[in-house]
Image 1 (cartoon, rainbow, N blue to C red):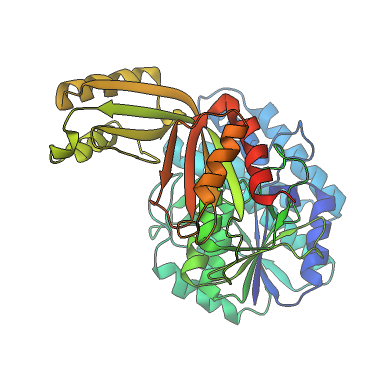
Image 2 (tube, helix red, strand yellow):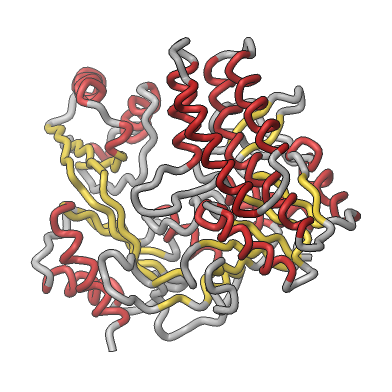
Length: 449
């Protein structure tokens, strides 16, 4: 059995959903279909989830929202007309939306339910279309599928008992079309995963039914060695390990939500990234283990939007608990950290800018001064992180040297380097303005002819 997950671009309109139908029909082993909310039809379009969030922000303030609702319904109506399926499904979608807006739950709970409408409606549309082309398909709500999650709106976690419930689905004769992005608590409350969580649903279902293969259909033929918007026509990656994909996803590769593969990884289920628009392309296989290669570097990931908190204090290394106290201050201010390279008398903490307002920065600086009495404390903003990724990278001679030479050739100064904390990556911190010089230079060093 295979699980096939289709992203937002694959359900953006009727023409794309027709491609899904052909893909499912071509392989009878594709028994489970997971779908995202409709994505953008063109560059200037708006994703369905964003339209639903806009609707909620207006409706929950008791402001007139019918114009927003009509935009959403017109979008679904276009898909229904393109697929030539029954329009009764539109009444169902509209009624669901209005029931959510008018119920007595908290705004946070209602927003979770409203956001789920995109995926839920996609699943209903796709299942109806699959029936019209002669496939034995049915819509399956995550509650009925057995996707049981924690009570954390917007950040739900799968509960272990889900997997035994999901395994029972192997008995289904029909093709099950399941909406991604959300599950239900033991008490029956709807909760969404974090944004991009349809990938998480696909991985959970694949793990639960113990699938032979989890296929993730998107709008690219494969994963590339580097961001195609920075380097033209980069080489494709044919095979990745789970660890490599996790590092690449975390550091800016947009193919997967960075938590998505964990359930599949735990069950050692292979994953194949494929293109809905070119399903015959081999794609990129993601596996638990692969044969070692002399060229161990598989990809170069990068991401902007970081700051570095730098703290220096003479004899810091002799002060027991200094690092814990520093990180505890961040914890108390609800800030998570990404990396924490350190020296004998100094420590840096890398933080995403999205967590760091000017007011919060001032609070953190004052607390560190009062509680830790450092000799020096500074924030460095506008940093970008670059990850050189590959299994065996730590034990392969010359990788760091090749990378630093490439950055020097690009006239990019290294603000920090973190090697050894991960078995499969080396991290460099640079000023954001140098990123578009750094990445092509690194690509040429590791993948040039």
